[in-house]
Image 1 (cartoon, rainbow, N blue to C red):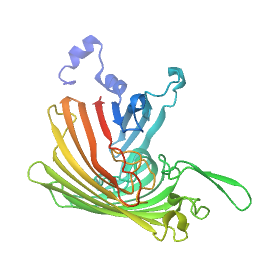
Image 2 (spheres, rainbow, N blue to C red):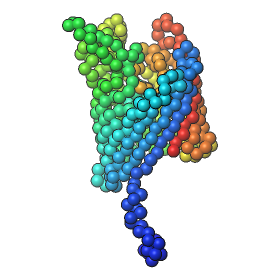
Image 3 (cartoon, helix red, strand yellow):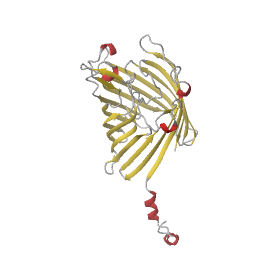
Image 4 (tube, one colour):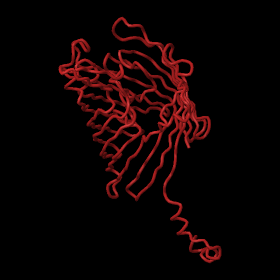
Length: 361
């Protein structure tokens, strides 16, 4: 078209090549969420409401290289009573470079910070972690097989009991905050069988300076975790996810914390009907899930689950609905039920409710 209308464009003083250079190739996207979470005696009144806004800049450096940078407000509670000008804690949650080797679409390298590293991969439930993660990751993928390996550091989450202090034999205090800051080497293997059906297995070796020094906090002595999942699509709109995960602890862990047990496991199942697509109005899905977690199965990470608080020594059901009521606008609601303590004489947890509006732009 530039050639065909060259004379007209010249008469107007417009040079297409100059305009193309000025436009650039950076794409800005983002999302916003306002959320209600309720649990009796835990999250009530203003504590039940929070919001989050995120912005992303995506740029293609060349045909094989993509740079992504993003910032987030984090989840800001309406219960926080400070002045607006004091809430200046916007942080970087994505800063990464993705590279495809040569013209190949099979091999990919990603280096930097991602906003959602999920232990077990995107098809797993993400029981123990699904949040900000600094890493270097290499992936090979074809139509039937995927293998991923990497090394990185967890950037969110803490122990179930929060930070703790340990005093060594020289009366020196050491303060620890749990999984945040711990490093991990990880691997994932997945096989695909068409129609979105896949099975996979994964392993995380978790490393921290805590492990040889601390014996008093259960989760500080995690050695590794491994798991397996199967995601089956059947019929036209049904999906069934089954996920098993086991955490292994150091053999020298204090017996007052773990007793004679040196590992703990969780079983998770979820059945989903339909699919809510953000770009397609009036699409929806409904799901029901079952969680059965032994004491110690949750290591205190920033879980990818919609649940919060106590996540282990728990047997619970949950259900939810996602509905796209307009383009790039979705309403989601989740509810737990029949929740009870799995082992011991503790009182059963109160049920959890979560509802939220999510907007993409």
